[in-house]
Every structure is written in C-alpha cells, then in structure tokens.
Amino acid sequence: MTQEGAVPVAQPGSDGAPQGARRQVEVGQVAVGGAVALLALALAWGGGALPAVAQAGDDGGPRLLPWLCAGVLLLCGLWLVWEAWQGGWRQMPPSSGGRPQITAAVWVVAGLLLPAQLITQAGFVPAAALGYVLAVQGLRRADRQGEGLQARRLAADLGGGVVVAGGVYLLFTRVLGVTLPGGSWPWM
Image 1 (cartoon, one colour):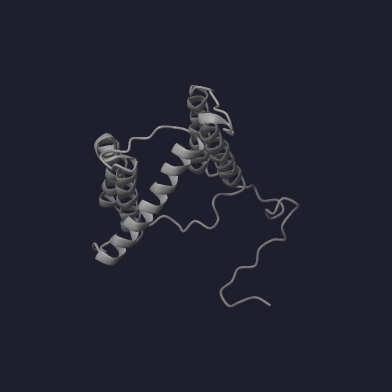
Image 2: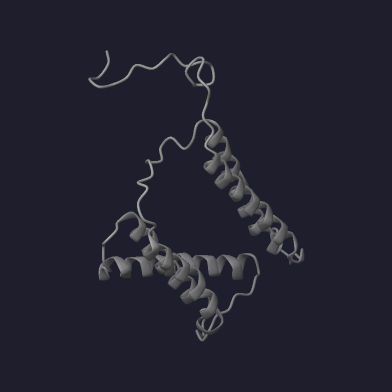
C-alpha cells in the first residue's frame, strides 16, 4: 500500500541506498564534521599543555576534563562526517535560503565575549551564568524570530545558568583542584 502522492523508491541495497544509485556526498556537511574533529584535536593538544600534577586522592588532575571533552567532541565530529558521507543529515530541515539571522548571532557572540571580560571582576559563576543566558537567548531567537524578551523565561534561563555554572565551579575547584576566579563573593 502506498499513500497518495508518495513516490515508490527502488529497493535498497546492502548499504541502504537504492540499488544502482550513487550516494550524494554533502561537501558542506563533511566540512562541518571535519572542523568539529579538528577542534577536538586542538582541544586535546591544549589539554596536553596543562600541568600533569595530580594531587593525592585526585583522579586525573587538570588534564582529565579537557581530554574527556576532546574525546567526546572527536566522536561527534567523526559521526557528523560519517553521516554526511551516508547522504547528509537526513533529519535536518531544508534551508530556507532567507536572510542571515544577525540578531541571534549577536546574542550568541555577546554570550561568549562578555563573560570573558567580566570573569575576573564578577567571578566565574556570575560570568558563566550571564554567558549561558545570552547564548540561550540567541539560540531561541534563531529558532523563533520576532519573539521578544519574556521575564519568566529570562528568569528560568538565569536560574539554569547559575545551576550549571555552580556545578562546573564545584567540579573544577573541588574535584579537579583547578582555581577559578571567585570574584567578590566571599564564599567562593
């Protein structure tokens, strides 16, 4: 049984592509996956430059987390390349070909740059929470154009940012023994 308007396709071969059909390689998607894999290698190289001093009772020292992140990022990059070679990211909606979303990009870039400027004065947790809020607002704008700021959603994002940043702060300072700027907060 076929649905009305559906086009019958050839029976797939052993690799999932129709028999006799060439698989289309998405070059742009291969480039994105390759860039993610290269970024992972750069992160691993940067993690290797950290001191390998492990304290008593410490599991791995300061190199552990960058190498774990680099390993996961490398797997993601290789997976993206593999998906692109298999015919592209099939679940991705087609591009609208419209104008670039400058407002969303400005929010995300601000979420990267402002915390870097404020981290020494404000401390890690407030700066990272601010970065989280700004980046989430930018991603939300990219998804839903024309939506304005909503106080309830902004407060929820700020609360989520504080929880995530606080957890990262505790992980780095208590587990990994890495000193992060506490700012003017007396308990940090």
